[in-house]
Image 1 (cartoon, helix red, strand yellow):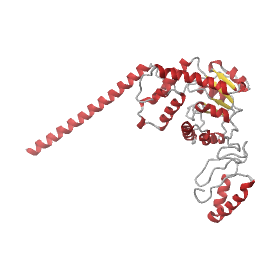
Image 2 (cartoon, helix red, strand yellow):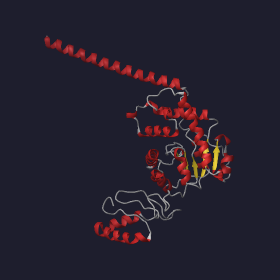
Image 3 (cartoon, helix red, strand yellow):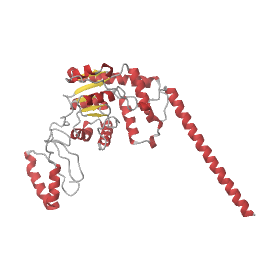
Image 4 (tube, helix red, strand yellow):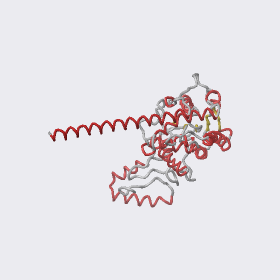
Length: 353
């Protein structure tokens, strides 16, 4: 192991049994019975849960994660990620009413994770490491296109009992998730048109463009990576510039391409292309649940970001604000230098007297 010689896992194949027994004996000699019991407890499933066998646990310092049979961390004997538990994949692009879909799924009884767990109306992820784990795993996936990069996030999702995933980063790796969860119901939320989606997407993500690359929070970097992965990276570039016709057309094509690609790879019986304006009926029919006696939820918790100005106005205001800040800074610097010069002149005058 990495610390104290206690790194071991719970593989149960007959070929490894002898090696495990020898490792246990060595651990007892090296670290004592108490440390051995602590390591053993880390590899035992929790009692009373619905899924109490072959459940992966997070790695902790000095104790490797318990692994499923004959596989790596978070993998099955076939080398695929464990797929138990996820029932719904909401993989419409951001700004296609994914928040409303997530709230609807919660109303229907699904334990739903919207995006990385930041949504103020959805408690999932608060007070846990979920946000950090999901964001970091997604960044690694975007760099490598390897589904195994998502293993830590999907492992934590399983441990928390989450059975529905909606919005980014899940929509950005939708093809991989569709392969990993072949029995999941796939919902692709859409807007009335690609143009309406584009306007909303740009109004939301453009705020990442006001921060210089060297001074941004890690989540702004994440936004930029997601925008690039979507095909609309120019929206978050710094400094902001007016989009070219080609850039705008590329972003619009990305929206249509995303929907059409999912139509091709998902079996028709597992796919719903859904506009939330359609309400409960198509969603509930698709999921095989009863229509609730409640209004379909409509939410945009981040509407405060949507200053409804066009691209030219946004870019113009950006540069005017920055120019004003530079001017104020220079005026303050000039005032300070003048004040210092007057003090120095007064000091020399007094010294001469």
